[in-house]
Image (cartoon, rainbow, N blue to C red; front, side, top):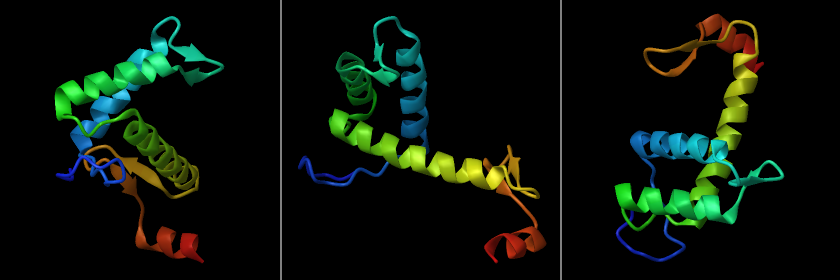
Length: 109
C-alpha cells in the first residue's frame, strides 16, 4: 500500500485483501435491501468500506473498492474466455490457468 493518503494514490492489493473483499461482496449481495437493480447500494458499499478499513487500514475507500472491482471483473472475463477455449484448464494447486506449449502456440496465432 502507498503511504500517502491522497485520493489519487495507487493501492496495491494483496491476495488476502482481494479474497476478503470478495467474501464481503458475496455476504452483502445476500443481505436483504443491499442491492438495487442488480447492483450494490450505497449503504452496501459503505459497509464494505468500513469492514475493509477495520481489517486493513484507512486506504480502502469506496472509490478504491469500486476501481478494484472494475479491474477484477475485466480480469475475470479474460480468464473465463481463455478457460472456455479447448486445451486450457485450471490448476487448483497453483491457482492459475494451465496449458501446454502447443496449446499456447495455437492460441496466440
